[in-house]
Length: 284
Image (cartoon, rainbow, N blue to C red):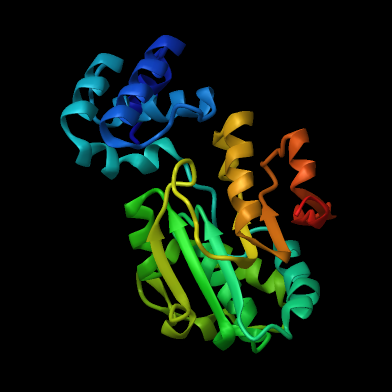
């Protein structure tokens, strides 16, 4: 976003009434439900859309969205700012390597769900951990997101070379003796994930707010996605995760996520430092 667009975004004022009207209309017309998303985050997202596309006001955005579904799909990333990078928070991946995977090693198949996978860095971080632990070939991963644009980026596994220094540093914090280039092709302008880190992944567009899930998983990641949800919607999504998790499974959230008090009936804290939970089997 250029400087003038940023200034316009900062000037756009969206009332609660305007937000409710637009999200209700989008839900009715397109079946995409933002009605329970956290209001401040959603307002910022709509303001970015108005600024980036010179729509002037909420009225202009309303007209554009309701006339053009592809516009909404194209710019859905502007509504949901995804926070992801390779080996983000290395201590989490160390805990997964040294503890979680050791508990799952005896499983014939390890099933993982990356819910809200964004552009895929988390998927490939986990794939590297699995490969280095000799578990990649018996792992099946499902990667889902609401954004088709983000999913396509994730599926391609191609990232800007500008990020390589940062990604390499995070990887080496996790595994000082490793070589990050072993898992990527580093080109002049981009870095490409090795194909052997992609073969175990199925990509699927999925809306956590309204879509069901008919599989069971040993690990579910949903990191920094629920920051956009209000308490009611969080509990609805957490119930979906609870029902989709094996009894001995692990649920991993982001550092910015806050779980409602009522979620204690669904999950028990396994490790506070890394925000890892387990299914509350007493409630099964």
